[in-house]
Image (cartoon, rainbow, N blue to C red; front, side, top):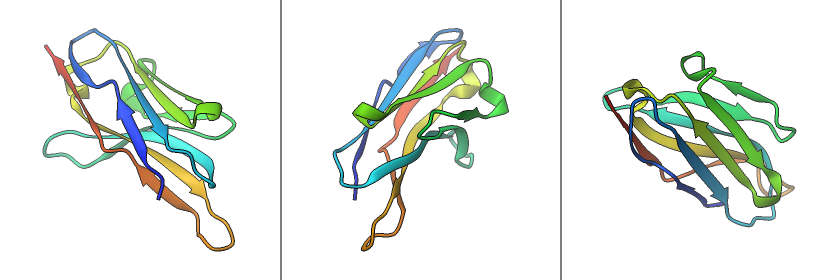
Length: 121
């Protein structure tokens, strides 16, 4: 229903940084929480972090102190700043956004297409 477009993935050496971006297309629906998941090969998708509309954040223990999540409500965008990257951060990263429905549409979530992040040792 609402398209999310991600950008910013790539290949980086351990210790390096990357910034992921995710923007939602214009919509009549109001954005609620946004965030990021990741999925490494052979592993289940795991939550990286979330940010509420009032910019309260929560990140996984595995990335705490290294990753920062932020958003720009005017641009319907969410960002993931990743510093001190480790090989174990290698995964496909997916953004998501929760939307508040209306009288004819229940609340729903949309997902980005995924962007590959590869960290070499």
